[in-house]
Image 1 (spheres, rainbow, N blue to C red):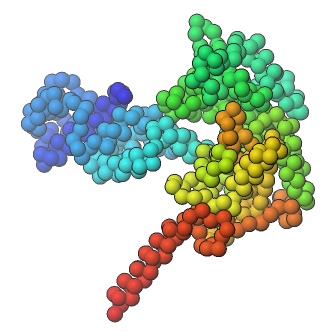
Image 2 (cartoon, rainbow, N blue to C red):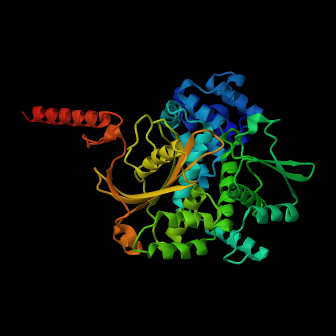
Length: 497
């Protein structure tokens, strides 16, 4: 990937500073040797200025290196990790200001201690490689962190959604469906909506939608296999792009197409807009208030609510994660999605979000997630029902989970459904609410006999529940931890003798 001018200046400055230090020259020494001012050299080393050719020549002569070597973007082995980071353009593509980081301060850190920071960056890159983490996955992780920082609630997008609904004259109780949203796209924004020809382009059979702007025309190609509520969300997202004038966009939501963090951020904003116009926050809050006031829990109540909003379980849970902190002050939440092929034991977390704290469960590579989680038991139950041709469209299950080691308790609701058209692939999406006295006072059905209570843990490898019938692996991580603790204790005793 070609470097931009900011990174070229920084690379030159890093190289200049490293060469100067290798020669054991101070800024003052180099200033005297080159005739350049001390402040000017300092700005070069910090990546703020790039010298003209005559000044580069003076620097190369003073440092006893040839001109071409000095201007080359190739860094020494000590600084290679920084070079790799800069060539990925992560520093310039991430809007660091969102995370409270001044880019100028970060660049100064790089120039002040390049070797030490290079070692740290090298460690991060090595970790990313070990987990096969691509630049795109790094962007997704940064986006998730951004969502979590703001409790997944963005007032500016909520206001844009309300302004759109007001302009369209949409009453509170009217739920926007596929037809209504498609009409707005075609008649007000000039879209042409076309079904993807999967016989002609079989490679696109898994692509939900593809936006093409050509010759002044907006064309939206959409998978004919999508359900009505999925199409409604796609149309709502396109309206988000158009109404909020988001320019740097994804043309599809496939990871292969993501080129920058800004594209993912725009896609998230457009998706948030779609969920806000389809599932109006105030209306959802009213329904959830009535739902929480019930003394008995009924799984079908939530399924009917999803159907009322003409949405998917995933969009419903994501929208709920925005509404609960805003309207109910329930902010300690987690959301995650599991995928599983029916008949197979392996399950994968494919999406997660934690609000207010890092909750359990969360992604742990190469270990076996606790089979007592309702997210997994719902998947296995769905597969069993499918084998008997008796599966519901959406299977809803809930439980109160007691974590053995931490004593934390969560009320977790999970929705399992098939992920057609992929054969045998099922998905469960779950919302977990951390239980404390405040939450218990707001949700009246938590003591309902219809909600099972189960002891759970993170993974089999970390679990102290040795007689667990659902165990999939030995508690190797726990055993290693206890062995290390025993070694430390013996070493401490030996030291005292």
